[in-house]
Amino acid sequence: MDMKKIISEVTQRILNGGEITYDEAIKLINIDENDEEILEELFCGANKIRKQFVGKKADLCTIMNTKSGKCSEDCKFCAQSAHYETGVDEYELLDYDRILERAKEMEKSGVHRFSLVTSGKGIRDKDFEKIVDIYKKLSRDTNLKLCASHGIVNYEQATKLKEAGVSMYHHNLETSKDYYSEICTTHTYEDRIETIKNVMKAGLEICCGGIIGMGETREDRLKMAFEIKELGIKSVPLNVLNPIKGTPLEDIEVLSPNEILKTMALYRYIIPNCYIRYAGGRMALKDKQNIGFKAGVNGALTGNYLTTIGNNIKQDKEMIMCEGFEL
Image (cartoon, rainbow, N blue to C red; front, side, top):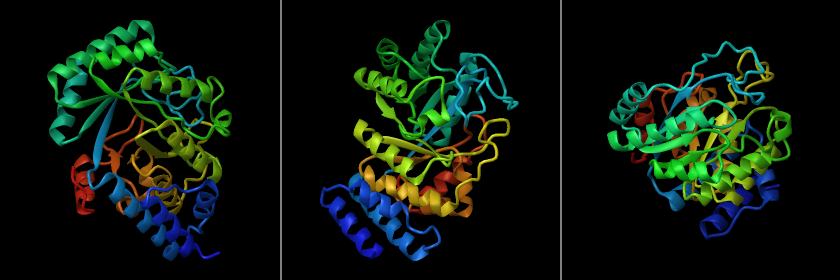
């Protein structure tokens, strides 16, 4: 099998407005992670696709964990689940002054988007009105694009969030439909799809990706990409599992840098016209983080994550601009 020829043909087809097939994607994701020459061809192809479809604009976002721990759901990767003893900080919804202080700090640092995140399957009624009020105040007091991540929501809730100034809602698929029940049993993949459709119906943009390295197959990673594409998503955050002590996945082996980069490049082939964002766990790339920006990535969740330490915002901006992007 001439992999260079396959990569060249698929890349050119996409540049001409065509698509990659699932079978072709399977061949490409099974490239040996130690075959640097062929991987370089794949990364260059993904970079060409990114340049043509979304240009050189990169997008930086950051999140704030505004309600932590005691989550009823049993997602096997998550430090905030009440089902596991992880030692995570637990607190109720933070007050507005504390949130505004962080938002102002992020705005000053040059971040484009700021998201509030709350633990739990969804938003309790007593918290929802408080959250809506917080977004209204942030819309008034900052110039940040506001994002929200509050679990499962209905259409009415999504509409109220939009009216409060939220522009994008974050709700991951997490993994493929086939593998989902291996990761979570307290709600379904279909529940997540319903939330995404509710949010879209309300007129909000959707940020939807997942986590790789949870014991799923390469095929599962590709299936998730095609499922995201089918939903019409334009912002795709890709997390790499950071095994958390106390969770069922604490002993899982972290993916290699080349396996991670190869997957991200394939996501660009499958979804040419979206933001593909580095998200949690990218420290697993070690000294290869910059290579992602040569292989289809054009966005990043920067600063700290929900329960883990992330990248320094200044360092991220420097790295991204060094790769020829505009912020």
